[in-house]
Image (tube, rainbow, N blue to C red; front, side):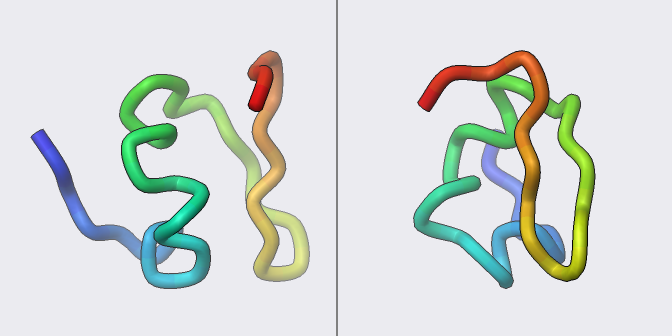
Length: 39
C-alpha cells in the first residue's frame, strides 16, 4: 500500500516505505523529523 503524499514529494527517497512503517512523524520547516524511529 504505497501512497504519495506531501512528505514523499519532499523526501521520497527517505520516506519511501518509511512513512508506512512509522506514521508518527512531525514536519519542521519542510523537513521530516521521525520520532521514536531508527534509520
